[in-house]
Length: 114
Image 1 (cartoon, rainbow, N blue to C red):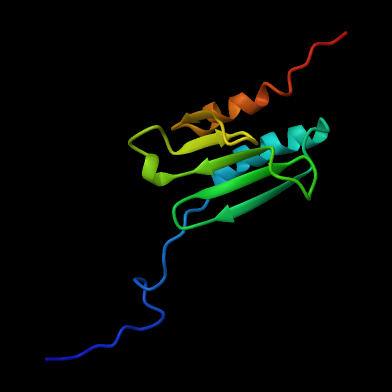
Image 2: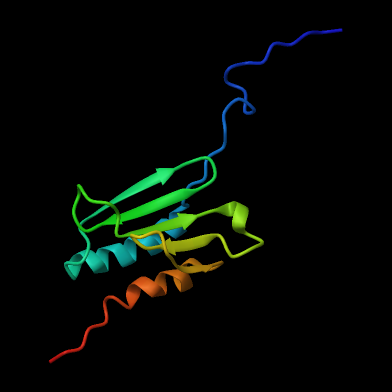
């Protein structure tokens, strides 16, 4: 019988974290850049946690986020991986396709011309 002690660097000891991949960040940052150019948004933050990755959008740096774009892989078979959540915690849109979910924010860019 051999006794093995667990290594502090083993994969079981380190919890996996959820993050946005390059394609997802490209889609999000494209929309973010357009909204910054329109003067609507000014700052963002990214959080990669154990069960969720969050892209927070701010109007000013020291505020609560206007919107949160969340990626929850555990919701894959239910409502969808992606969600856009408003400032008050209301879920604005949920789905499996990131571009489709982000359309709810693109409507803010469309303005009537006088």
